[in-house]
Image 1 (cartoon, rainbow, N blue to C red):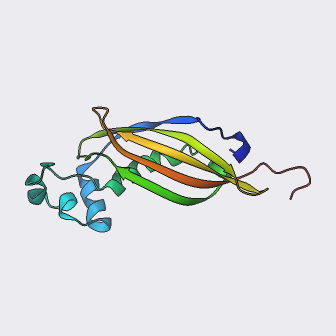
Image 2 (cartoon, rainbow, N blue to C red):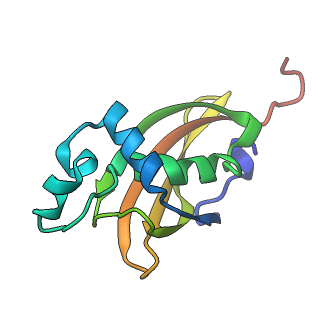
Image 3 (cartoon, one colour):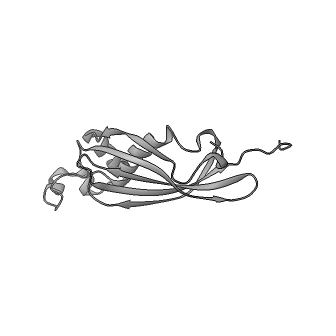
Length: 147
């Protein structure tokens, strides 16, 4: 969608998915190799009591769900910034659900604008485990005479 078509308050429900242990560990070993995400014995001795998903992995799982229906779609030009807030641990076997909502938009220039999408991710118990806000540059609708 063009910038003009996106409205503050637009919402998407993201398809639920279950965190797969092997994928969770593989991601952590490659991109976030801390014992809480990679070493089962270490994790058992922590307050969480088990391996937890890297917050980056949790976000990536749901981001992949979001970009299928991305508010900007083919008109998206680039991301500008992203903020992630990790609220609670995610474990292998958790089923995650999420919502994406446009929380703001700003005209940038005659050719594009910026919108901010907030994604809230919950576990199967309905507990909020992660929030994110991403600023995205999206094309404005061409005016008559524009190339």
